[in-house]
Image 1 (cartoon, helix red, strand yellow):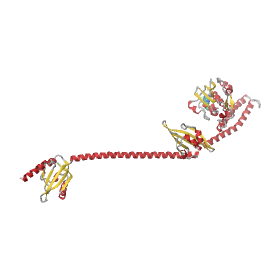
Image 2: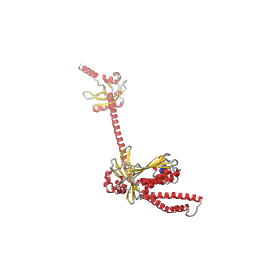
Image 3: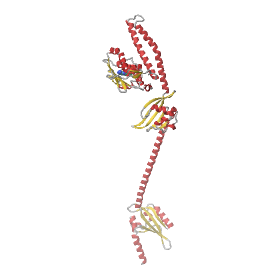
Image 4: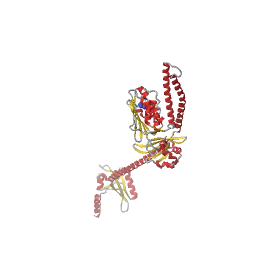
Length: 514
Ligand code: ADP
């Protein structure tokens, strides 16, 4: 009875046990299964009992291995395997096994416990994928970060290379170069600038432009440039007899923002020398031409006046033509001489206090005959009040006003009217010459004071000009510290304005400029 009770107890217990268990004989044949095992495998007792345990597993050999291991160790726990179920397909399970022994410790079979771990596996796989994804993400971000770092490094290298290239260009530049930052502090100077000015860059870099005059070698340069280096400007600077520099200031802008300034020192010694030689040549040639031209002038004049005997009408006509051409040559030679004197810097001399009204009147009168011949009226508008006398080189100022009168007459074809006005203001005198002639084309107005420049519209009317008159006039006015400007409209007319400063008292101060 006790035994029966015990067997029932065990059956009930095994039936109730939620763990699927199979009982095997020593050869691995299933001899019993509990309720949970039936539910898990989907097979009933009739199908399973009598089957080899390998029937239940995908990997048939693993079942044999498991039992052999149990034989060795007594117990084997948690081996992963795939259970072949009826109807539910393959199922991931964990298998534990232990040997069944009798009282004498003889092995009489095995217990096999099977845990369903498919849910756990799924969870694990899910977790693994998540971990993988996260790891992937992390790896991704790490990679991205590395890429960024690589890019930054590349950009840095690129920038460094660019900087080195720019520095190499600056250092090997044949012009001297100062680079200032936006606050006019010296950022760098190149070796050529150091050579030109005999300065060491260590003494200069980091100083403000305004402090540079404290460096003895730079004082004259700063004086020439004045106080500002934020506007484009060009100046000449003679350092010594055999070194003349052209100094250019160029602000460095990005859009409207000022980044700094450049000071460029360009060696123009050679150009200057050539220019001087050219001027000398022109001066020499003009001087040489003057004597024979004067000789021709006086000889022709004497013949025309009958001093050398009577001449007939035809001879007179030819001689008159020769005389006119010779006069033009003399004018040209005189202009060339004036230009070369201007360029040699010895043009203005002999300043005297002058009544400018008298001078203007004299010039107008000298054109009386010519204007009548051309049918052009000349009107003189006097100043309202008597003007003060001013310091002038009379001869040169006469040439300047004469050039304007000559042009007004030459470049007015018919119904010409020239108005010469003279007026005085507090500090200056203004002379204007207005004509109603052919005017200066807008596109050429910028070039009008350039040596040898002639407008395209004048060459048809007048072939005798040299393009030197206005260049000489401008130089004369500049040397008197005056200004010249003009307004012009093609086919309507032109007005030239000259303003000259009225200087009272300090003549010596004034003369310093000449
Ligand atoms: P030019 O000997 O040719 O007159 P200038 O130096 O006196 O030389 O003048 C230079 C050019 O300026 C002239 O060729 C002409 O094109 C222009 N010009 C000067 N004055 C006038 C004016 N009053 N009317 C029209 N054009 C003028």
